[in-house]
Every structure is written in structure tokens, then in C-alpha cells.
Length: 167
Image (cartoon, rainbow, N blue to C red; front, side, top):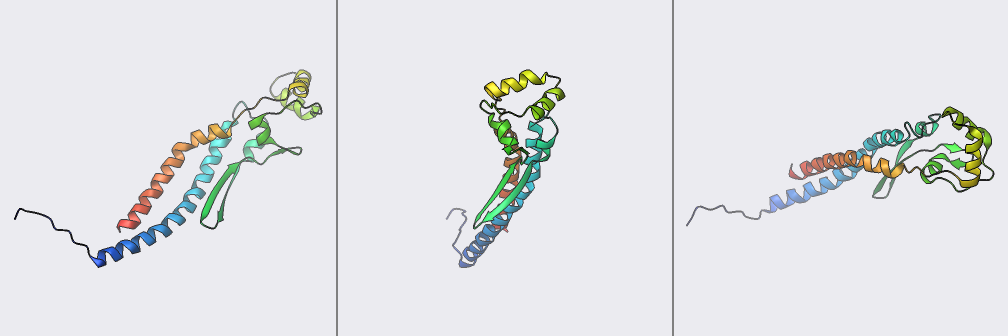
């Protein structure tokens, strides 16, 4: 008989695998929650960086970027974004999507922004009234810049889960 290796099924080994897989499931659920909570502040910084320098006025929009995690059943979600309002309007949506013509555009806030940029307020106000504002998508750019951070966090979580299985 040639030199060989014999591997046999063992109920003890199978029982240990089942226990480790059950443990891995719990480790995965808790790990996802922890990973998302860790990612929140990092993605906040990425979104805030999208506003500088071109879309920075008072700093209010950047300061309003928040994150929260929510658990519903087996699902944990992470939400990251700005909360600032300009009057009754969501400032993030205004920047992200732009606006259509706004014949009732308020002069004072537009004038304050224009002056802060060294621009004449009247023509800008009139243009917003006639044409609206351009879209400046920042969420997609922030998502793309966040991908390496997310990938690293997921890889780290994977390492923890695998380690819990092979213990």
C-alpha cells in the first residue's frame, strides 16, 4: 500500500463545526452592527469633504451631516446625510438635484451667498428666478470615495467571522 492520508468523518468534529457556524452567525450579526457604527463617522467626513471649497457657504450643510444605524429584525442599516433646511427646503436635496425656475426665490439669502463669493447678487437672484440652480451631485461622489473604506471594513469583518468558525 502506498503512503497515504486517511480522513474519516467524525461526529465530534461535525458537532464542533455546527457549533462554530452557529457562533459565526451571532458574530456576523453583531459584527455588521459594529462595522456600520464604525463606518458612520468615516462616511460623514467623506460627505463633508464634498462641500469644500466649491459648495461651502456658512458651513451649515457640512455641520448638519449625521449618521444613524437602525435595526429592524435581522436587518441593520446605516444612513448618512445632511439635515440642514433652507426655509422649508432640504438643503442637501437642493444642492444634489438643483432646482427648477423659482419665481419666488428669496433675495436675502441668495444675496448673502453671492456676496460671500464676491459675485453681484441681483443677476444671480434673477437667474435663479428664471432658470433655477444647477445640480451638484455629491452623494454619488461620496459613495464612490467611501467604497475603499467600506471594502476594508467588510474584509475586517470577514476575517473575524472566519476566525470564529475555525476556532
